[in-house]
Amino acid sequence: MIYPVCCPVCSKIVIPKGERICPSCREKLQYIKEPRCKKCSKPIEIEEKELCGDCEHKKFHFEKGYAVWVYDETMKRSIANFKYHNKKEYAKFYIDEIVRLYGSVIKKLSVDAIVPVPLHPSKYRERGYNQADILAKGIGKKLELPVISKLLLRTKKTLPQKKLSDKERFRNLQEAFQYNEKVTDAYQGKLTKVLLVDDIYTTGSTIEACSKQLLTNGVKEVYFIILCIGKGF
Image 1 (cartoon, one colour):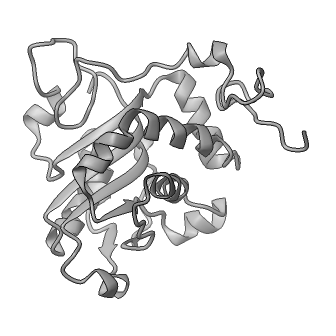
Image 2 (cartoon, helix red, strand yellow):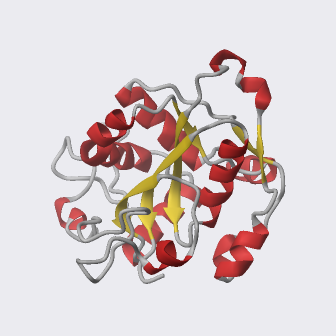
């Protein structure tokens, strides 16, 4: 009664009680379905194809990724509120959907740890939280998997990715991330598979930059789970 659940789409109090999203708002969400790219999970038009155009022409170093929704106008507003307007409670719905759709898949991957994509300290101070870390900890708790929040550090303040072209995004993120050896002592020799967590995947430049850092520092396989993925790239 004091803290009623608000819908992550329309922001109104959810009816009926016990749900995390309005039934009518759920119908607006575009869930990722087949056919999808076998590498990044991006929707593809031709069922016979295995990879999207992006994954056909670029060499990504992650093994495979999974996405929940298409990054359309509905989810753009929802995630913007989650990231920039302190709507951290939306994470409960996002986490529930990730676990409902991909919980068994993540378990089968047998990852050693879940790792959130980090924020630069200046952005963290501005927002007060890292949305990817909230998601990672929620997934880890439900699936009983360890989360290493600071395995990767963002040491370079980059330009906002949404303002850049495809090539500029990759250049922008060069040397932006650093592997934090201080937190790996307890996992020495055990971190062979890692699951990255973030909110949005468009060109894949952020996930790729993080994957390279992990692989350079001894991780053998990198997977990712994402809330939303772009369409038509």
